[in-house]
Length: 533
Ligand SMILES: C[S@@+](CC[C@H](N)C(=O)[O-])C[C@H]1O[C@@H](n2cnc3c(N)ncnc32)[C@H](O)[C@@H]1O
Image (cartoon, rainbow, N blue to C red; front, top):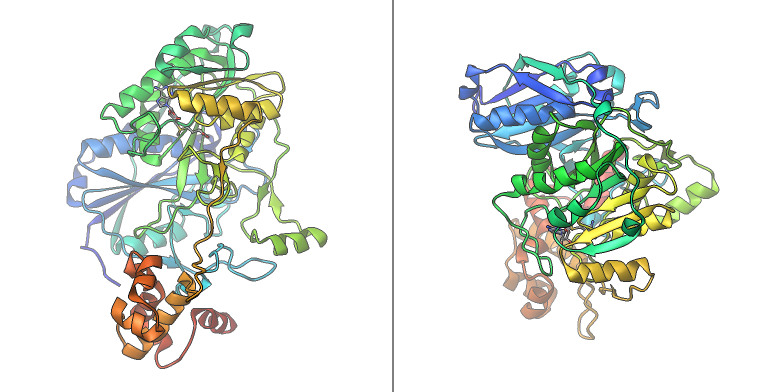
C-alpha cells in the first residue's frame, strides 16, 4: 500500500458529550489558534456534527479546502433520542491542501436472509471486486453504539480507518470552547396564516414573493435549492459566485415566516451545508444534522454518498410528533422475491427511523419519473419530515418547489401547502401534479441491444473481456475484442462508447493477478470460495 509522507495528516480528536449530540444548538464554537497546522497536508476533525462547520471555517481561513464530511454511524440502541428522532451519527471533517488518500476497501455485505450481495449490482455481480467495495463518506460498517461514542475520544476503529486512508497520522486533542446562547422564545408571537396563502403555488423569485407572507405563520419550511453545480434547469442557471449570500437572503425570509415552534429543513451537499450552518447557528437552533445516505456511482477513492439535511428552528421549543414510519434495516436486501418471503415468514427487517436514512432511494433517471426535472426528490423523504414536524391542518412551505414533491406529499397527508418556483414551467407541472393530471411520465428502455445479428449485452462483453485478459495477460484493445467475439467493431463501440467501461472486470483481473492466477475463476465463484474459507 502506498503511504503518504510522514506527518502529513493530523487528526484533531474531540471528546463529544451527550448534550452535544442531543440538544438543539444555537451559539458559537471558539477554536484556539493552532500554529502546528502548517506542517500538514490533510486535517481530519472528529466532532459532533453541529460543531464541525466552525472547524471548517477556521481551517479554511488557514488555506485548507473542504474535501469530505464523513458521517460515522453508531447504533442508538433505541434509547439515544431527542425530538422524536433517534440520534445516530458523529462526523469527521476532512480538509486538505493536497488530498491523497489510499484506496480503502471493506468486505462486501450480504443479505441476512438470501445471502446475496446487499447492494443491488443490477445484474453486474461479475464486477464485484474480490477485496470488497470502496468506502463511501458514510461509514456504517463499524460495530459502534452510542455508548462507544458519548463522553469518549474517537474510538480505535475510527482511528484505524483514518490510518488506513492516510498512513501515518498525528493525533492531538481539539481545543474548542462551546458557547450556547440563551433561548429567545419570548421574542416571537405566532400569527394566523391568511387563507389566501393556503394551498397555493406562486410563480416568482422566492426572495421577493416570501416577503408577502406574514411573520411567524408557517409550521414547516422545506427547501431543496439548486446546489450551484451547474445542472441544467429549464429556465434557470445553477451556477453563481454569490451562492452563500444569495442563500442567506431567502433563508432569512423563511425564518421570518416560520412559527416560533416550527421547523425549517434545508437540503444540500455537505460543503454548502457547512458554509451555511456556520452563518445560521449563531442566530437559529440547529436541531439536528440529518443525513440522507443516497450513494452515487462509485467515483474517486472515497465515494460521495450523502446529502446533508439541516434541521433548524427559531426556538428550542419545537413541535415534533412520534413517527408512524419505519426504516429498512441495513442487513436485508431489497430484492422483491427475498422481501416477499421475509414478509411471509414474518422476519423483522424494519427498525425505528434514525437521523441517518439509507433506505430512501432517489427517483430513478431511468424508468418512471417526471420527464422534466433533473433532481426530483422521492416522496418518502418528504413524508418523513412532514410527519415528524407537523400534524393534520398545519401548513408546509416549499419556496423552490420544482416539480412540487413537497406540496404533493403535504396534500396527501392532509396538510396545507404554499409552493413557489421562479420557473413558470415547474409551476405548471406542480399545479398539474397537485390536480393528479401529470401525464408527462417517461419510460426509458433498458440498455440491452436486441438486434437480429448479435445479442450483445454489456455484462456479456465485460465477462468475455475478462476471459480475453487472462489469455493475453494484458488489457485487450477494441480491435482484439471484435476479433475475439466475432462481432463488428462498430457494434462494440455502440454499446461502449467509452471502451474502458468494457474493461471493468478485465482491470480487476489485471490488478489482482495473485487472486486469480492460472485459475479460470469468475468473480462470483471467487466470492463463494472466499466465504467458504
Ligand atoms: C433542486 S430543485 C427542487 C426540486 C424539488 N424538490 C422536486 O422534488 O422537484 C430547485 C428549484 O429551485 C428553483 N429556483 C431557483 N431559484 C429560485 C428562486 N430565486 N426563487 C424560486 N425558485 C427558484 C428552480 O427553478 C428549481 O425548480
